[in-house]
Length: 193
Image (spheres, rainbow, N blue to C red):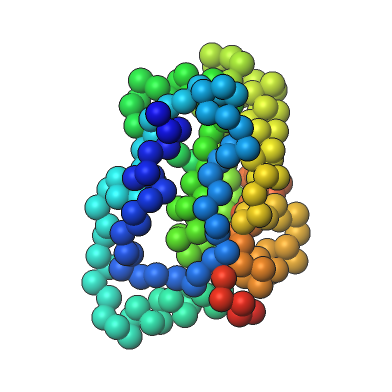
């Protein structure tokens, strides 16, 4: 059984508005680990196609303007949880206890956002405790997320405004922990913003 089935990363429906290409090359969270050997495997919800696409009802000019506005500006989400969850709600608690929440890199690559302040596990950080928000839970959550980020080359940890401004030029996303850091998106066509 794959950690994430092909529907999660495979067929991607065309969005009603497609933004600039990013340099995302298909990395999946914790690809450097061995499924079922290094951590438990769960059936996960797909990153695309889980919900029907919403047609914005834009005409061609409006689509062009939307793409231009998003591609030419820094688009920052100040509160997000860009993670993938198990398909069955019964698996959520055991999944959270692993401390390895899978990041939706494919979803981020198609979001149009430049940066995301990731609120990570937030109130459901119950890795070592049943109540969450314990020191060890937060440190493990942060450490696991940063370890995963260190093994890929798409998302960049932003530590300054300059890091955010560089994201479109290097075609990646910037990441930040609420009150401390951020994710960013970079186009793949070589253009500079």
